[in-house]
Image (cartoon, rainbow, N blue to C red; front, side, top):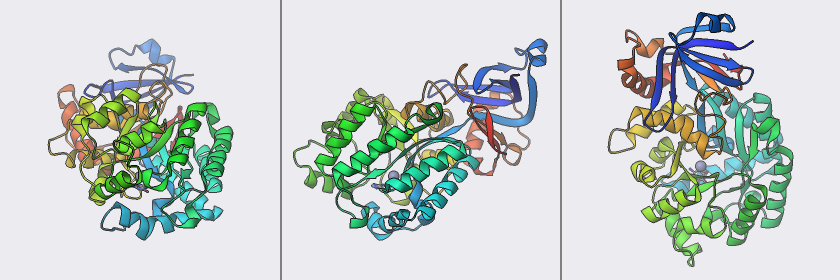
Length: 419
Ligand code: GUN
Ligand code: ZN
């Protein structure tokens, strides 16, 4: 029997258009969205044909999509350094080395997926470490947790401690093994990302091999692009024959649909245009950019150039699993006020498109898989009338004080995973 969830429904149709049903119904048939209705549209006979789940007073939103984070960095959140490169060398590489211990890798993966789900995130694109076993373990834990996840073994063959480096051929072969085992697992709930860390950690050979594997497998790609000025200078030295940072990835065949590029801060319009033409996506990670003083993501220019934009926590440079926090920071990091409707889009449908799952999740279009969250906004919306005219106000409050709204229940494919 279908289930009908009664509550206040919000979901995005486009970057600026949010559907708001103050008294709404979300109907879920098995694992899919069967429809959303306002109270007056949802007839008594329809109601009788469903099991009613009354969440009156609660908000019902699509599950949030975190398009960029690092599983092995969960315990170094908040430890500062002067800039990205120092931070990697001072804290991160050493922390990632401990992922060679299977129990440590498993514990970190469990806590990461648990932390994401509790925060209302139902899908993520995550970096593991360069260890194949730790990455395999991360897949096991994502499979068990029920979260929708794209995970990658980090590829790096230079400029880090030897324990994290691996020659290009075995690193790519082991990625191919992970693809055989996990890509498309559980009807496409899990996928493997080809994950060169960034240009500094990878020789051109490794990047070329990664591009070939992306082409032959059709798997997503994730990496970092243009986060920090020092990084840009190093890239210019390491790849003098490439016209800019974007060209380093483009030349290797990595700039393609389902290429998920974290940060994308210091980019020319020409680079944004190439990303857009290639259907690659940019992930805005405002908390991380703030923390590492990396610079400001050119949100408006990215949108003007028709680049798909998503939102990322970037834990551990980001300090929170909550995408409500990322939406808030996403506003604060810009010089102009950002439309709350756009922020919700970035955290849901924009993320779904970036991960290549725009036809499956991200909003409540009929036929999509039923990933949704139920929020109890009592603490933050006290006294506000839940009516059409207050939609933008309500969303603004939710974004700026969302951390105080309780995530009450979290569903993936209609199954409750939390609450
Ligand atoms: N660039 C290369 N590696 C990393 C990382 O682990 N975190 C961030 N924020 N940027 C990176
Ligand atoms: Zn990152």
